[in-house]
Image (cartoon, rainbow, N blue to C red; front, side, top):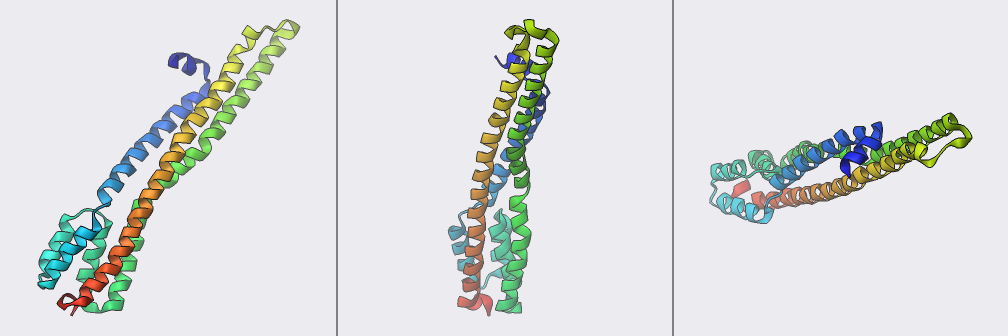
Length: 206
C-alpha cells in the first residue's frame, strides 16, 4: 500500500517525507536532552546542603560538576558567587537562567513550524490534485471517464492525508516537549531559591 501512496501522492508527499524525518530526529534529540537535563533536584540539593554544612565547598562544586543538567549548573554558579553577597548571587542565578532556558527550548520552534506548515502543504497537494483533475477533464472532453481522473483524485486525497499525518504527531511531540521544558524550568526556579536558603542558613554562605 505504501508504494501506491508514494506513487500517486504527487510531489507534495515526497516533500513531506524529509520534513517528517526532520521532525522525528529533532523530537528524539530534544527528548534525550530533556531526559539528561531533568534530575532529582531534591536529592541533589540535599547532597549539596550536607557538604556545605561541613564547609566543604570544593566537594559541593565537584557534586555540581558530576551532575548533568541546568539545575546543577545554576547551583554551581551560586556557590562560586557566594562571597559576593546575596543580591549578587541572585543576579548571577538570573543571568545563568537566561543562558540555560534557550538551550532547553532549542529547535522546539522548528517542530512548531513543521506542525503548522504540514497541513498547508497537504492542502497545496490537494489543490494540485484538483488542478490535475480539471486538466484531465478538459483533455478528455465530454467523454471523460473516472479512471482518467483517478490520478488527480489520488493526489488530492493522499496529499491531504499525508499533511495531517505529519502535522498531528508533530504537534503532539511539540506540546510534550514544551511541557517537559516547563517542568525543568520550574525545577530551576525552585533550585535557585533553595540554594540561596542553603548558602545563608549556615556557614556555607558566610
